[in-house]
Image 1 (cartoon, rainbow, N blue to C red):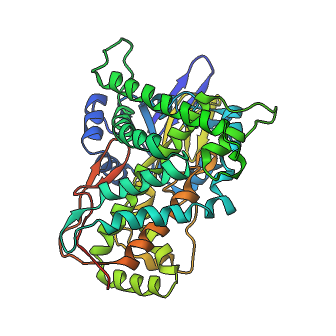
Image 2: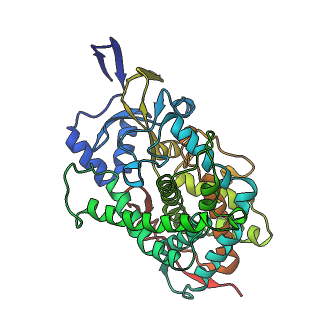
Image 3: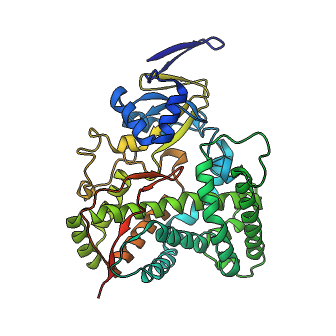
Length: 441
């Protein structure tokens, strides 16, 4: 345990214990294998500990469920977004970059498209894109499902969120995947204070972003002049029509940043979860057989439980962050100073045997007939920063998996579990989720 006093305020700061390893070596260990580094520290120090990370500095890691609950319920005046966040690559108007009232107002405008009748309207798009992709799969030959799932989720978002079609659809399909892949890697790298040129990583990202913004400006102009705009169901059309409480409209820059935020939060993460679902089901044939039978019967109980368990055992995002904005913040036995970065260890909570008995076991039955505690099962984060597209992603996971199982036989395997592979922000199956599938007669 580390104790010190901040002389200008007189506050006594108490941080959780941490390793005596030099900060540079802690950072190297985290960059090499973040999950393993955090697991080792949890095993050594318990659910709360301190670690030093590149870009983020000294970070307090919390994985006690009661403390997680407190953090997620804390108002943004006391805890809010960290400064080194995804807004660095998504733009200053992104939900990840905004704080306080601006974040609340922006989130208020973005909630309606992802709930109720509006949400149900996207299901036909999801079935259409999934069916088209699965029809192209080779019969009886092994393939990696990650890239096909990426294609499905990207097409769904471009149609349902961007309202893109024709040449704009094609151009966005070309520019978005490399931009998102590069941005997810640069999030953990400090932004350079000097110009490294257009061939540097940040220079390439800015070039992609300029091309993306130009396409979105065209989509906004088309939507604004569309006499049938009120009849459109895509999120961009709703953004163009939305108004803040003072009657003002969202700017092009705000719309562009938020569309990219929705895409980044809902494209790669959902596709990766689908790949993990295939990887898990192939290694649990009894569960796969039961699931196919229920899907054929039009019952979704086990499918829901499988998705919950995939997200618990293979969370694509392993952590979420907060920063202390109050003069001090107490959580559990710890007293944290203003500016202290906090990491909620999503994967650490999910793998805690005291929270989920036999946590290492893939066991969807644990969720049959019951919903998980929202402060223990946290793949979407929690509180005011919970993923705004969680309901959209959940429906997409159900729809795409249901479409796959109704149309194809998935062959089980005795191969070892696929390893975890870090794509920068997200963790994917090391071999991309290998599958052998045949069309059902």
